[in-house]
Image 1 (cartoon, rainbow, N blue to C red):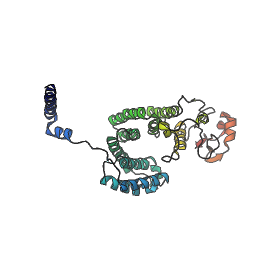
Image 2: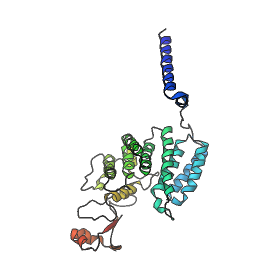
Image 3: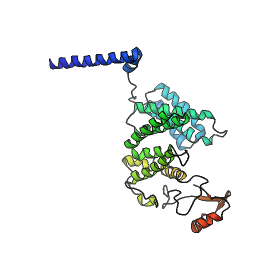
Length: 318
């Protein structure tokens, strides 16, 4: 009897909810609300796995000019199974790559390059819908919401991306602090979002080593033996990202000092690190005056006086 009453009550509540939907938005709202949710494929097809191989070969080989062919194969696979979250994410990443390194386009990027932001956002949106527990997808999706919002001057979309990124960072800070920091790296250095991006990179270092890294003297060599398993695997090189560690510091260095900036003694311009067959932490950098390479030692030893003697401010190239 009690079960029967509860069932009747549940039906009454559901009926009331349906009636409210119809009154508020009409039959169209009810039809959309009652449509089945898209769900992730239980298994992946051989075609999807072949497309994966092409994706990784293109990415790891740095074959930027092969992105169109990779996208064609990936999208054909996606159309055959639009419930494959991995394929959706790979398509999104190819579009991100084309947008991020658009300077490599021989004829120069045209305005249509911004379409890659829209397409990348769409495919990562699908990946998130299909696999909402994958924090990497959420981070990329958040960054693309902000990129698309910035392109279209849509503050609401930018804010949506900003707060989605905070969710992504909370879910996997070791991975998504970098995504949060990289996203605004092309913005003006004095903009609030750029400054937040720099701080996100510092925080990425902090969570990777388990303590606050000294901002004034960031000697990262002492942390090279920290754990590299679990969530912290995102902090180091792997088969997925064989140059992840170097890439982080290259990007961070570019954010800490921009080309053309006047550099003074004691200013942090980059970070040191070690990888591969290196026997110790180090940093590669170059000093140019009027486009002519100089011996960095004289600037390191001479400090501000050496810089003042140059005809133009020295520029660094990492």
